Image 1: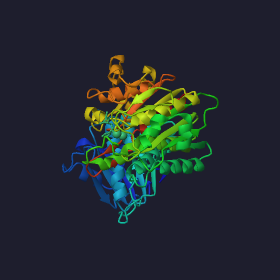
Image 2 (image 1 turned 120 degrees about the vertical axis):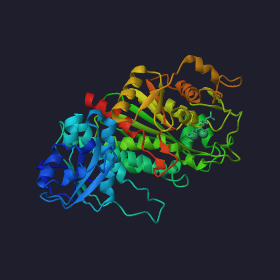
Image 3 (image 1 turned 90 degrees about the vertical axis):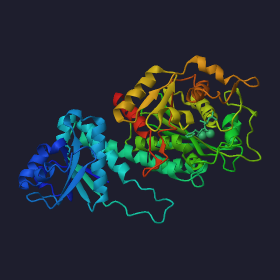
Image 4 (image 1 turned 60 degrees about the vertical axis):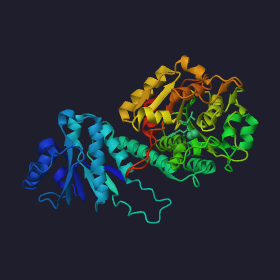
Length: 493
Ligand code: BES
Ligand code: MN
Ligand code: ZN
């Protein structure tokens, strides 16, 4: 998709479609007013007809409006200007874009000035429009012969808004593309998207950007390093584990931010086998790793002036003759022993050795992203990312970033009192903490491997995919949150 700026007056823009927001009760903004005048009242006739309430999500298409250079005008409801906030803005943009993509429209112009006048932050609107356009245009086709037609939309223009609208558009586009990359990897089935597939994907990505370098550790190298926990997860699978490390060098000598994603390409539970119902969803158990790929790609595309390491701990969790069994004790790279009481608590096992490996990068901070616990889904549903960590300043930053981009996180306590749930009679710790507070005890386990740096943990088990409905599939979260965080760092550099 091409994004451009167009400062012509709204009546002379020769687009296939103009998207024009209308406030509740058909109140026109300045753009709508101008178009109405030119067209001899065509807009107000519809807007004021009483047929629509112009809530966000409602829309109506006018063909060949008189006196206007555009072929169509899409009126989109914007709701009550007094209540017009970021959530409402995102809805209006998404709704307008979806209608454009459904139509026979190649070149469109989104009249954003009226909502900018109310909302204020033009840069945010421009970036969000580009992001929504990219994500709305995404279609999963990789394994479908009968995939529907591609959207026709080729270019979208906006008026010049904010300080640097071109940069805002580029930012939004990169974030949207990063989300789509994460969605595609998440949506691919486990028999295609294996640890080796993720490694190849990372290598390809690194080949496309000068700022990116890639290093992939195989099982022999991990054995050499003593990554007994990570390897114990892959033991039952014919698919070899991979530790993928992408390096984006953009910030001179500063310490890097490390993003670490859980990359379980399929989680059967292992010998502690999961029940069959909805087990297919466990192909999404690599969405943390996918979000790291998405964010790394976006950071490279934008040539962000930050140093960034993107890691993915990739393995398949399967039962089998060589699989790890409940009661088995393995030794982590950090030297601590772990009693595997449940082979379905595998995410923390791949992550703990990767966290130890991250120490060698002398990180400014480490953020891990993982579909780690069913308890996070029970607690937060599909809305919030669960956030825990050992550094309140880092977590406050992430909480704020989440509010700013609407990919919100909510903090849970990581109090010492919870740590004792991991006590084991036979090893330094157990890999599960019992029935209660599952999201917290999983983070407790990780915290023992994150003492060398400021660390935050995002449990995205609820936010990474939708299990039902027309939008079933990976969401691309938390790429927006990660990018908001990285962009804020880049701004400070
Ligand atoms: N990948 C799952 C977590 C998960 C489950 C995410 C359902 C989304 C939906 C993880 O590996 C897992 O199985 N966790 C167990 C841990 C338990 C055995 C302590 C869980 O949450 O049930
Ligand atoms: Mn599991
Ligand atoms: Zn898992």
